Length: 99
Image (cartoon, rainbow, N blue to C red; front, top):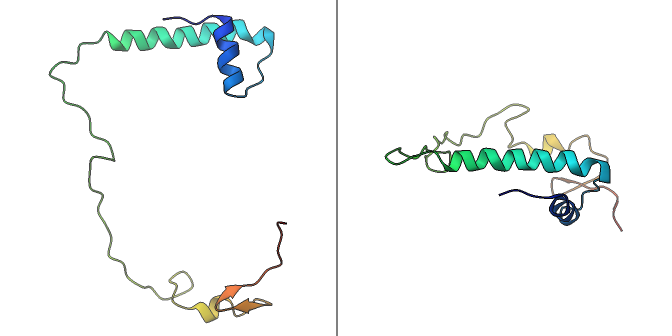
């Protein structure tokens, strides 16, 4: 499989990329090189090779959920907003910035 300049122009437009005409030829060559490499990978015989695992397939260890004390431990809403000029129910009150 290979692509031509018109295909690259169309893909760039769909991706909303501004590609000048002088960049189309080098970009076409790069994409064709990538597609050739993918074709080479498809030719590799992988029969009998077990699929590699990913982070999706494994259970990650969970740490115990412990409430800590100190400035990063949480559980101190009064201390967090103590110096704020205006608060409401342990939240900072700020002026509206989006209309």
